[in-house]
Image 1 (cartoon, rainbow, N blue to C red):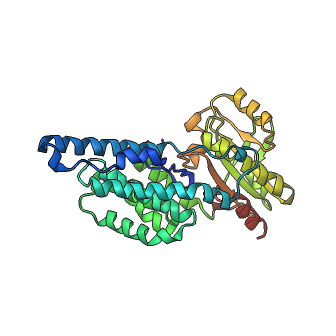
Image 2: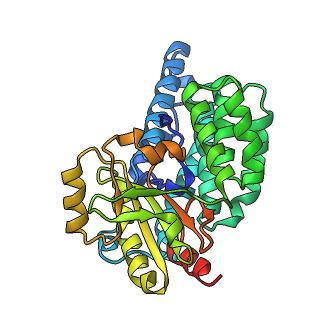
Image 3: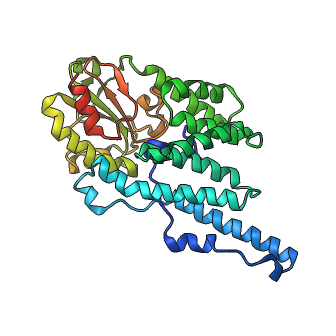
Length: 333
């Protein structure tokens, strides 16, 4: 079950800044109240808010395409930061502009939640100068009596997704046991399941689509990436050059990958694997989001990349940021 809201997972967050002209119409100064009738003025204000929200929502939902060269030459963490951080920062500024200009608009709270998510992303992408603002916005949202019901749980969800386990666990428990929407409660329960698995062995044994027998227990002594993905998942395919580069770089040193495919079409999967020269084994059962291991391990979004250390213990729930560096660190232990 997947949460279908405007809230995006930070690790997968790719935010578009709005092009200069795109926001200029929404943010243009409104006519003076003295030049129109009171009723027309209110109508103009309402239209301005609608236009501004549409621009903001579209910007958050439609990021710019990543550079074409990244398809063949995976970007470094520094290159990703340089490309994405300005977009995230620009959009965070526009969210605050929206709810400041239209505090009574029905979308004001959503803009605040969007700002919180963007501030987390900015800090995670390396702009620690935004930490003070992030702390203030987080505190404000948690203490705001006007933010109730689903919006309150939205705040808890965003904070939980961007916090260390010791902070996120109580928030996820509150969501799972509270009056949150059913899909959010289920996702919180799955997140708790994953957090509780950190530091413990992962049991994984199957016959891959190419006939290979896979048993995670037999891979002790190696660092293993468990890659939950699908050929229909754009971000998954977008990560493939990085995954392949890391595999080529560290495979001879003891790095393995196990793919868990959420595809529905076996032939499409096997053809994709062959075309892209993916040498590691793939689990496939054709059950889409009901994939056996996706359900067992509480996977609610893909790509999801777990790292298993040499002792066979789950160490990392999100290996996408600096995959190469994280693998190298575990190999050195």
